[in-house]
Image (cartoon, rainbow, N blue to C red; front, top):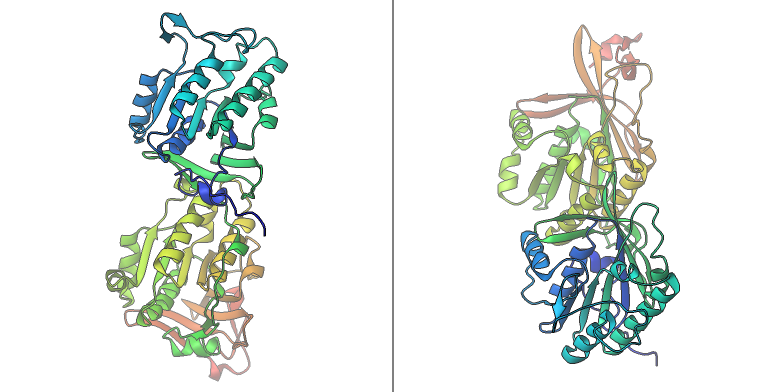
Length: 484
């Protein structure tokens, strides 16, 4: 029989244990790399605070113990359960200053002996050394530094400890590259133009989620946002058609949009895309299902006012728990943090319908990443979880000869494409609605008039007797009597 899997050590960092596929392998050594202010010490503190007490040891070679505790308190991390061995410059024991001698085999108050003496006496299970770069400055050469570090790490793990150690890394600095080979795992933290990112590049004896993952730092420390991998999530769902509550729209779509599909609502500004989405969600509320709107373009008060004007009871839906409206500030979220927010909504609240309003607003949160890739991953995850997805896409032209569906090249992703367009008829600005694509079945090929009235949304009869509707200025054909 294969040996039983060793129980993992959880780090206590929200999202990080998911990246590590359950946590760290015990009695191993892990290098945390990064520049100043990247969050190395904070990550290590989470690891210690989440450990046993007594049994968690912070070995500081840079900051004093008082500085560490003060900084941790300001960050909302309580270090009361963590013991500190202060070997920072200037600290003394029995009148002797700790020094790193030419060889660590020499008896005396060397850093090596001081650490081992403390560990053998107190037997901590979790150790953080911050930072081993300080030892490098006291070594005669790279070979000796590597030999000394290898000796220390092996003896600490032999005592039953799991060891995290940090290394300072500046731009173009490769002086600590030898530590990559000495550790069982390598965790790199960095600050980029798009925000903070964490990447696990090595984890001996364990799988992990590869690639960069966004994270944030604030009160309470670090929160990780694992990169979304749609294939890791899924549930069974029956693709039944969902009524919109508008008989003419259901006729247009031959029964309604199917559950667990992606629908692109495409049209220029003000044509009614968001309101149509809210209409679909009002029907979901009647089925006692929960929906959520992520609005990147407007606040709740504006949205509520517009819905009241067409008789949609969205405020009652929110009060009943059937709808959540979240106004999202794009620059406050990365794609990974937004995806984590959506996952919580789906997996913890059982949401069955999601609307992203709009793709141009969501693009601001991507900040340099590939919009297609990010939207694809998010939507595939939602569909795998059986969620019905509404993507609001604003085309940049009001009318014109070229009827674009989307400027982002995402039409391939949509199972359904619903087009809303303006048209000028008898010197009056009117609206039309039509279906361009429906993977799960057939649909009506004609366009219908669309209107938003105080009594609700209205979808009219098919527009016969006109041509050039998509161009915005239709012409009456030879049979004008059928014009609706």
